[in-house]
Image (cartoon, rainbow, N blue to C red; front, side):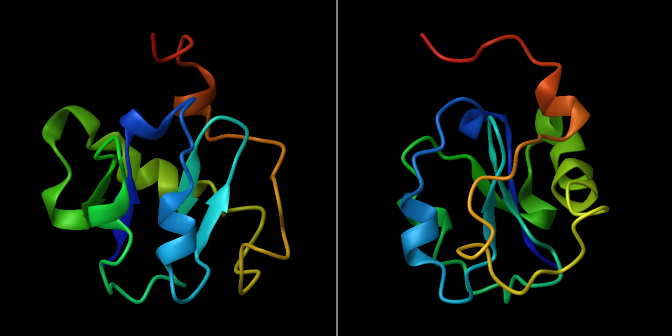
Length: 106
């Protein structure tokens, strides 16, 4: 089990969750943040600090955002498990689901 970042994060990327994550498993893509499913220790520290309520436990992702579980997993297909987001910095890509979205926000 893991936590998932859903659509409310797209084009927001507040990053409060990154500061709270004790294992540095939240990576930054172009338009969204992503939680590495193999590096997440399910502590839940990220969820309450997200100002846009974009983070959900895998089993609690609202149905309208169910595809975001796959997006968080598939984002790492060509990256593997780097063992920490800080050393990676901004990753110049997004999952196709997110890349295809129109600009989000106001």
